[in-house]
Amino acid sequence: MLLHRVRGCFFLFEAVVVLFQIPPSLKHLKIHLSSRHCQTSESSLSEATFVNLSSPTCLSRTTAAPGAMADPWQRAYDFAVEVARKAGAEIRKAGESEIRVMTKSSTVDLVTKTDERVEKIIIDSLKEEFGNDTYGFIGEESVAKGIPCILTDKPTWIIDPVDGTTNFVHGFPFVAVSIAFAVKKRLEFGVVYSCLEDKMYKARRGKGAFCDDERIQVSDVKDIHKSIIISEHGTDRSPEKVTKIFSTMQRILCIPVHGLRGSGTAATNMCLVACGAVEAFFEIGIHCWDIAAGAVIVTEAGGMLLDVDGGPFDLMSRRMVSANNEVIANRIIKEIEIFPAERDDAVIKK
Amino acid sequence: MNDPWQECMEHCVEVTKQAGKMIREALQKDIAVMHKSSAVDLVTETDQRVEQLIISSVKAKFPTHSFIGEESVAAGAPSVLTDDPTWIIDPIDGTTNFVHRFPFVSVSIGFTVKKEIEFGVVYSCMEDKMYTARKGKGAFCNGVPIKVSGQEDISRSLVLTEVGFKKDSEQFATMMANIKTILTIPVHGIRSPGSAAINMCLVACGSADAYFHMGIHCWDMAGGAAIVTEAGGVIMDISGGPFDLMSRRLIVASSRAVAERIAAQVTEFGVGRDDADGS
Image (tube, rainbow over all chains, first blue to last red; front, side):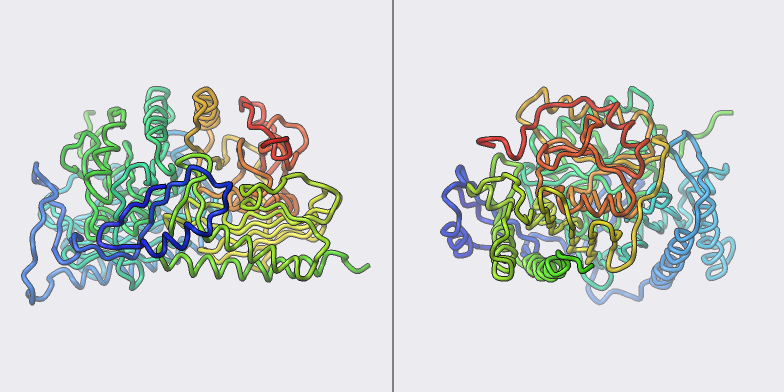
């Protein structure tokens, strides 16, 4: 039997108690300790972190000066939380009646009137509060209608009105409103409202990540064999992509890991990393609006983001690994079979 | 007529609530994790304590009844279903989720008499959702009636299944190939919540349209089986034949059409039986 010491915490007494209660028929026991409430001294909660999207060496971290000036984006942040909650209520109400389902790029890429209506509610609310032209907007349904998806230096809202439309159509428990805000291409805050669970995840750069009023942090697991990994099959069923997705899943399962899960929404998956329920989430094929808010929440919870090839995270690249730490992230990256996905900011050639 | 098993069911709901409370308390502390058959087959002290709580509470009130409990079987108790009134217990379905605090962790109890399932209770403790069903009396979540989606079109279905590492590489390859086959029908999506009992309840309340799995146990299925059928759903063997509680495999679905389509697409592999000698 092996006893593993959890970083910063010591549970020998508890483990010994457990040892003597083990029935004799349980052979080949290995004991390790799962700690979710051990505050580690290595956590970066006291540091400000930000995701710099324009820097090739992105994910630089800086320290915010204590007693800093009033936050210029506080009002926008607070309003985003309000708007997300309002949008979530709208989604819940819509879920009580019959939902007419349409499709976008394929028969499994679903969209509903609720997606479109909720995006309009969010954008109209933001315009009413802050003015029509003060800020830019990147919204999933607006982009679907032809509005370009280009991030400039202008303060910009990045919106997914209903992340997990398939789940919404079916009443599967994970449906999220995702709202992020970027200034000079740097993400300032992110809000993800998991509306069927009524959980508000939020993070302001430099101020930590929260679920409702409780501070959240990533798990401290460094051993890949003790991890749960999330990935999704996505909505592209083309054979080459499906083959690579399954091959990657197979390789990860055979490490082995504790398990492979999928909630059906990228924003929720990132929050599950941020609150320590899973160690990593990766996907190729997602969009900037799916991950922008989650990116802030994960980093403010002490986690990190990388590209699937191990390079710096790129919001417009359609791919990402988010993880509790570099050890887990790099181990997963070794197994990912990459396939191409057109960038969100690719210029559409007519 | 008075329901002869009403009192049992009421006691079952009560003891399940107590079990759920014990699990939620354990989630606030650190969890020592042990392994059973492999590095990915986890068990904790809470699994064992919860099972002891349930069995001792039921024995005190119904001393002649029999038990099949996951942790008792792991400790050497037989796993054979007789005609006796029998409580089939999974104290923590989703132990891996429990260890990680992933949101789907349940207590599952099914009650059989003469090998027929009379009622089932599944408590999703982190969501605080109590699913119950008495044969002939409908299925409920927190007292509110639930029913399956009624979906008959596989291409509009959300399907649940679970993936896990298997030492047998051929079985592992077949498991993955099955999921790929179903995904590319195509269906709307595949999800893996991580608890068989909760998966059955998600089908029962219409949040998913089907769940299929080979390799689970009777204690994973007994609680959910009545809940699905009383919600208007279908339960069958992975081959399309009649459901067999000890077979270690099942399909549950919103309709016969969806269930049969899955049965037609899936390649079987041997998983043994819960009531086989030496299993």
